[in-house]
Image 1: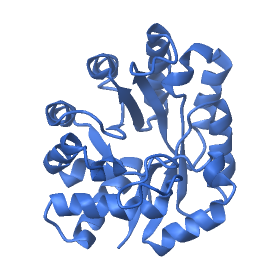
Image 2: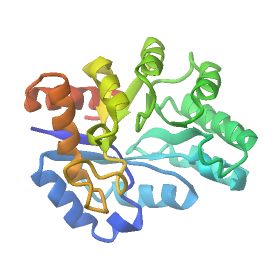
Image 3: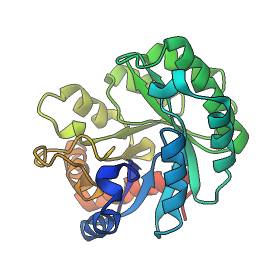
Length: 257
């Protein structure tokens, strides 16, 4: 079995300080590839600094909506420059977060447009963060729909009905360990309807360890196998078959070798 963690924050201190061990543990569990995600100027720099050091480790560059009110034009220009790196395989994460509203909604929308422009110009897929802003997020994306290579809504937290809208637009959906949580019936219902050719899975580590590892405070790529097993069960598929198909989808989305 081979899996790819399609969305990890390996540059965060909880994981980067022991990255060699984290990746070795991951490989031992069959999680043999990773996409580490850029979220601000510092994390983008760290992403580029580590992706050349490890085989099968790729990165993205972006600016999270939480930081939209503090971003500078230089930060945006730097994302555009770093996106040219040969192992940067997507732009993001980017989007709208109207749950926390750590930045003004108007600033979030402006930044979102700026990052989508980079994705379109770079001909790279884009990773979407969307929380309590589904309609507004689609409204912005629709302005670019003919210019974006691929779109994935990461860490899916919406309804099955919303997922169908995303799928009808030709986009992808990625599931975290939330699908294993006891109160996540809505997420499990969505996982059942998303076809494997449009599905990816992720840890979003170091956050949200899946069941039965919820007590492990620092999530890591090795734990992706629990998310895979849960969705394979929902799909009534052998784990190896599910892993094979979702890995093919991930490679195709990010244009991985």
